[in-house]
Length: 244
Image (cartoon, rainbow, N blue to C red; front, side):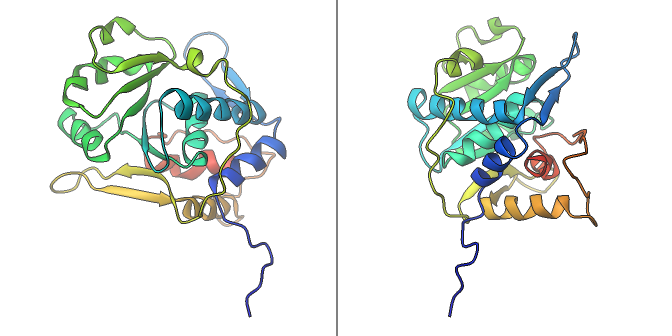
């Protein structure tokens, strides 16, 4: 005999919906180094994640299980990608910006990344490598940075805010198998070429619950979490998901 009590898939989508509704007024705060910090509520993050998913699907043709890479610092837009990409059925691929050029180009090729979302301040690192990344068709640039570094690039260049601006703020998220890939990263400091590691929706959900337990980090809605672990490093220890 099987029970059907709470018989629902444990997916990143459920984390997003929970945070954007139950904790909708909580905030993601990004310090940019200039002026006042940027503040965006969990509800706004949910709406913008939906807009990003529409843009990736409809404008850039991202399909199920396709990898979408990020080359970004810790910021609200990176959190939006953390949810938009896996919730639409694709796979978030965080690129470690500390890796040497030859490893980065190998990783992008091995993962067959067609889309990279990149912070403008990091264009100086990735622009010289694009000729060695033939799989990359689209660059989505977020935040300030010298776009002239991309002059002559084979990949199409899109502005993050322009790309999502006119998109709906809700998305008919698919009901996914909890065992499906949600995110991936590649190892560093090992022998030979880096190795890909894939996180399932289920593993991310369970890890988020574990982080919030009293004998772990014990986070509650009364806490503020300063996430200094890079989002490109093991999902920032799962903190973006756990806080939602």
